[in-house]
Image (tube, rainbow, N blue to C red):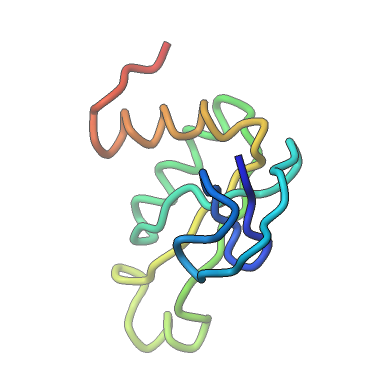
Length: 105
């Protein structure tokens, strides 16, 4: 599995499908990988579940603070990232919460 340091995406091939960067490196367990982008309300729920499973994460707003104040927190978009060592488990949780495609074991 390859890792794009620019956009934090995991890639099957040696180039990023998102930003088109080439010559990616192998992913390391401590690399924070993009998990999901959702409205703040949904991210807050996901963060609580990740906390319950002791899964570390980073949450970033895509709008910036000023934009969030102008638009309101209801439509503020956040991006969550988790270390690669926790990525599979985190994706199971995301799928269970938002897609119901996998069950949490």
